[in-house]
Length: 318
Image (cartoon, rainbow, N blue to C red; front, top):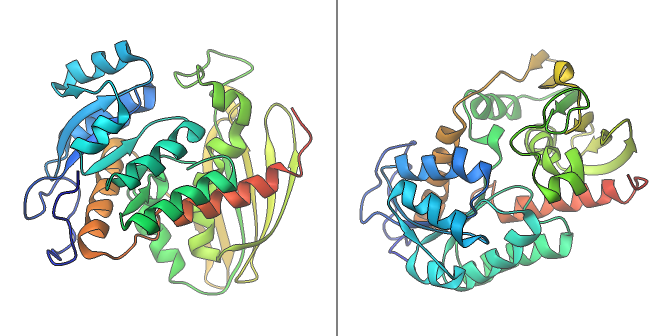
């Protein structure tokens, strides 16, 4: 199904929670895990510019439970969801997401993707190619690029010049050595791929728009699943990123500091992740209506996968 989101409509961009002109697009959610429960489903239910149409999951009983909670349809087949909906929203492991996203694009659905889009460059590029080939819009939900005040901060720093270096860290306690695992610990792909793939996209999603594309990357492994990246950017600036899901609880945290001719600037804190997801959906609907691709779309997601795969290839196995 594809609603009339053509460039002819060309409305002004909306802010989160504001209803765009015209019929409300129908959004189907694929995935039933903790992320879907905590972020995707409540954000879709609260978004007044679209209709939360239904849920599909790999575990039918979990899909039925989530659908019942929000009073929406439970789909037994993802292709049925694609046929009914204008937007496919994904809350699935990356290598499950990618082939389904290609099918959704072929069915005419716009794609609200999770990060990473895939864990192989070929699969991630297949999603980007499907978006372009089928003329649909796409957005990858990279939290820092849609949460506030971080999204505005990134835009402000990207407008500055003279950056010299940056240092980022995202140290999660999903699998802490000294405490109870988080709600996201029961995730085979996170256990297998670690912080590089789960939180690496977040760090890169901020570094790249400010410092330019990555032209060189080197990677080293530390304790637990710690990976340290050393990056060179198209602007000439250098950056580092330390990534982990296995940090001690007392050491967990997120930070990013930029240094350059205009001084030192630190990433602000953020909250309201469901609200950020609503803004990601707004961005997707705007891209669909105007025909202008969002810079945080599937092509950017494929580039992130390429960089992470290049880093992973340099690391010894865990």
